[in-house]
Image 1: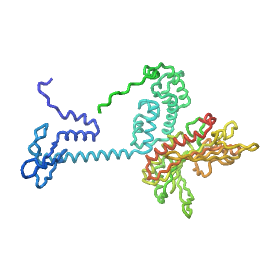
Image 2 (image 1 turned 60 degrees about the vertical axis):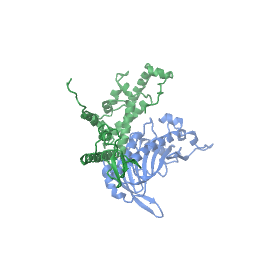
Image 3 (image 1 turned 180 degrees about the vertical axis):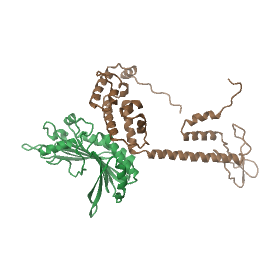
Image 4 (image 1 turned 120 degrees about the horizontal axis):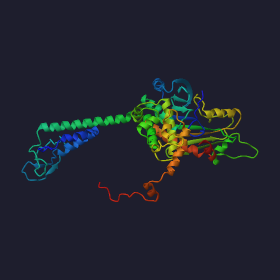
Length: 266
Length: 261
């Protein structure tokens, strides 16, 4: 423990921010600066006398967006009735500070625009075939629930290749052998889904009567669909014989989860 | 060359031919785009055939060029013309595989910046009824499609056609059970020179032996009226496939479902 007080280090926030997407970082930075920027409502008085006759409020918000134009017959006076976290400067700050804020505003706007156009470009670069490929793989995962490594083994490709297949912006083209394998695995997945909604992964390594397990059968170079579907019959029987969990028994008895009675805080 | 794979995921699939087609506004400079398309499709469709089609559009019929890119196994073919672009298949593992191949064709059209105006899109399935155990083809259709029977006569040909309008698209259905003698594929159907599917080979043998066969022609059509967009069209074809499948199953008898599915 140190003997000296450690002032709050704003750079501690940096690692957290850097983990987020770049435009999110910029949004947060903007919010940070907006919360500390001078919020300057101005009271415009008539030139003759200081009495508040026909006052007009002009609010100024944000960095660098300071009202610079002044009506000819009016003088702008910073209001003294505003509570500030720090002392209100007697002037709105020298040209240097305003210039910095303007540059920051310009930079954030430019970066945001660049990020948004990149995001839209990335979306446009996704092809119809790639999106369909990803949808097929997602459907497979919903049926099987395998890990990436296991799914790659079932599809007879490497894990890196599977990551590329899952990338909708990747223009990888499937070879005929890949198409046939993917089609066969899809057929098997459909047969499993028609039997049970439970992901196959929870049962795929259970030893069957034949001594093998379904995952091993799915990982072979040549898929014997009829044998695998036959194994599904055995697995389906095992599911039926498994004792029901407490949640399942309660649901069967008609009990449901209690819904939130209180409105959300938002 | 023939294919050895039965079409579809059914146990004894009756599917013989599948076509996905884009009907486009007349594209007069298509010939200048063919070289680029051929390069893009060469890996999957290495063989190129040239043909002509007679277009009766307006007062004067004209002959328009057609380009056909065929796969090495002759199971798939892409046909490109000035009025339509289509993918034909006599090998159909399952819908997702066929639609993936079609999506690749759409992406190629997008990449080559053809930007055709799409009038309408279509997805067509031709199923052949080749009955087992000498059963008549009409046994495979729902009761309402079997027509009338007359004492002392046997049906030499019976066709039924209907158009179903759904919310966003329509399905034209034609069923023939039995098909007129010698008719293998529906009339007005222009097939590519692809390898015949196993069911087609069997049906041809039956025709030669003068045994009756039938067919079911399911054609799902949707009007588009927009400039080409590959991703949007790919999604539309997914919906069309589901609708076509649902319509086809509704015309089958229980006996057909038991035998085929």
